Every structure is written in structure tokens, then in C-alpha cells.
Amino acid sequence: MNYEDALEKRIKRVCDYINHNLDLQLDLTLLSEVAALSRYHFHRVFLAYTGVSVVKFLQLARFKRASFQLAFELDTKITDIALGAQFDSSEAFARAFKRTFKQTPSQFRQTPNWPNWYRVFEFTLPAVEEDSVKVLTVAFEQTPIAYLMHQGDPQRVYESAAKFVAWRRQSRRSAIANSRTFGIPNGDPNIMEEQAFKFKICGSLHHSSTNITENEFGVKEGIIPAMRCAKATHFGSHDTLETTIYALYQHWLPKSGEQLGSHPCFFEYLNLIHEVDECDLRTDVYLPLA
Image (cartoon, rainbow, N blue to C red; front, side):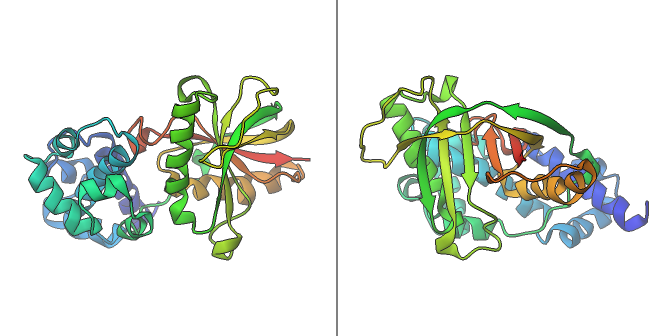
């Protein structure tokens, strides 16, 4: 391993440490020790590899968690979210949040500007190692689902997700606690025209005979068919899912001797962004096979 690779691994270790310890008091001295770098050099090395200062990265990591709490945990008080983000008061939290996202926490809770939110987090993180992805060949069983179709800007998927969550809570036809949650894109949003992008946000139904009547949310009834799949579990942010997806396509598939099926790649969210810290997210990536 050359020196550049070693530095990248150290910075990734720091990023992971921050994301797993958002409730701790973290300072440059502690984080430089995690990186095993002199504190005189650590800050500059971190900035060089991520594009943001370590202080900014730490604040953004806490703001990201707070954003999901604001958008999806409507019963959680803003004061409690502010304290969880290590602010002494909701006023200080509101000022810093507005400087970052151009919306107050109350405004974000009511109408989140997700495209602007995504732009705030456009910086580089150290890559996931290719050999960290473990792949199984599985038989996916036919699954009745309720789904909401998102179409257009992929950075507005969370708006559609919030509507689907609201439907689940209101209808109780696909309760979050005891139903599975899936996402089915119609392709790679990085290479598609914005208006061509579609994404089904899905929750499993316990009986295929469950009829979903017309509703204000636009939720419909459907099926994920039975099929053979290659399955790999992605750990961490949904923003880095493509690292696991591309590992399946670029590294596993050519060596496997398998042929691709006709159904698009899809995801099962084993836990949800408003339930756990982003670093603790687990998502199964399914690659359909012939």
C-alpha cells in the first residue's frame, strides 16, 4: 500500500468515527489521534481528501441527522433536535441551520428544499474498498406491495418518501414496524434525463388480495415478481449506494458467469433514515438474474 492509499484509509476511519459518535464531544485533538496523524497536519490532510474542514464535516454530519429528524420525526421537538446536534439552544441551532440550508428548522420541517439540501453535501468522501462487498445468490419470493411512484428530480425523492410514510401511518395497510420497505428505480439517475427518472417507493402488503382504494397520496397496489437475484448488503449512507451497485456490476457479475434478468436492480431498506444514524443504515441491493 502506498502512502496516498494509507492516508485515504485514515481519513475514511475518521469520517466513520464521526458518523458513529455524533453525540460525543469531538475535537481536533481526538480526531487527529483517530487518524494517527499529527494535529498540525491532520486538518490539512482531511481538507485535501474531503473538500471540507473537519469542523465543517462534523457540523454537517449532525445537521444531516437533524434534517431527517425534522422531516420525518414530526413528534420530536425542535429543541430536542437542537440539543442532539450539540447546540446549547434552539435559537443557536436555528441560526446555524438557516446559514447552511437557507431555511429555518421550522421552514424545513414544513417544506424541505431537498435539492438545495443535496447541494450542501456535495463533497468527496474516501471510497469504499471493492473487496468489502459480499454477494449471495438468492431466490426472491413474489411480494405484494403498495407503492408511490416518484418521477423527475432524484433529489426530490425524499418529498415522495414523506408522502408514502404519511400514507402508511394513516392507512395502516403497510405498517412500517412489520412490513418490508423497497425502492425500485428505472435506471441510473446519474445518466438519465431528469424527467425520465422514476422511482417506486414500496411497502410490502401481507395479502395479495388487499385492495388499495384511490387516495390523496397517489399510492397504488402492485407486485415485485419472484426471481433469482444476486444480493449484497450496503452499509451506511444511501448517497453511496452506487459503490455497492457498481461493485456488483463491475466486479462480481463478470466473474460469476451469471446473466442479467429483465427486472431492474432494486433495494430493500432494512432500517430507515429517520430511525437510526446514517452510518448504521443497512440496505440490501438486489441484482436480478436470468
